[in-house]
Length: 389
Ligand SMILES: *Cc1c(COP(=O)(O)O)cnc(C)c1O
Image 1: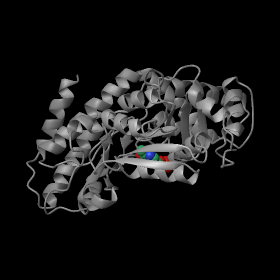
Image 2: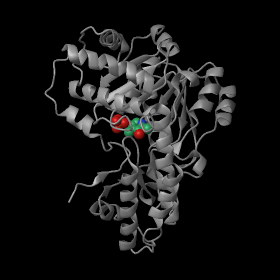
Image 3: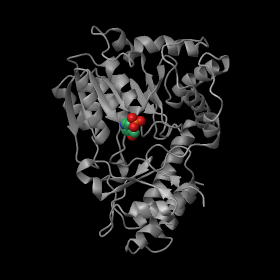
Image 4: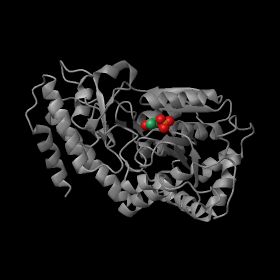
């Protein structure tokens, strides 16, 4: 029997080419081939985020949390005022990181499954001035997609910088960093970027770099400080060797492969494929009669789906689904953790993967005593997929 599919909101299924690259003999970090691959990956990261040539990419060894830490450590000075758009678990982590670096944080929050509109943010910005606004593009704990473009527009009008946590969204949900004016877009390798865990990725706007250059207080983290990393990124992009701390060589090589695969598909095609796959999973879940955590389909993410357990079914469902070939994730938002589960569908995910997953969910629901008509989720998903052919 083949291994189960990994259908969680990161890590995800990776392509064979990426995994083959991980298995190559590790090169020196100053090997010319490695320098060329790293240099190209930095350029490609800009292209994937649709950022301008004057935006600065950073690739650091660490997880998505390091990307958040790096953005905040460098852009927040003690006493800065930060508005955190709070849509769930990772927004609160962002707020904690901001406080750790001395910011005064206000939260603009909503009940789980809801999102904050640009109008609400504009109203808050009229009452108070903020140095920074942070947004979680897709909240991984609720499956909610937030209007980055709209909120960034009102925040920039009010003179705030904008940091967007795109860890569960980058290279999947539409993001046009330059056109939308996002100052920091950040993610981690193991989500839709499609590389095993271990890289923190950020792209910073010229305005973001200016705020960092104009700091009066030193950056309060040794490892995150862009003073050490900017010369490294500039060197590799200029095809010169450089050293501050050893790069994760195999992961960077795998990143260069994955970014090329993403760009070969094309960003508009990548965004459209995630919309189609996401809509198909949601149609399947609805056909089974299951509710979802997002309160409105208009603000539901396309990278994961958060179905609510039907009456009489609990978390033991996930063990059954695994036995039928798909690994899913439990709930994450503390107040409703036991009421729902999460299906990740981002990156190299295919129509076959989601059909196999929905089939496993259907069968497992029946085994859990829930009346699910055989094939009903698959038919609904296939109807959506057929529309995208
Ligand atoms: C996964 C995730 C993170 C944290 O990333 P790690 O790699 O686990 O540190 C942060 N924000 C969001 C939105 C995520 O989905």
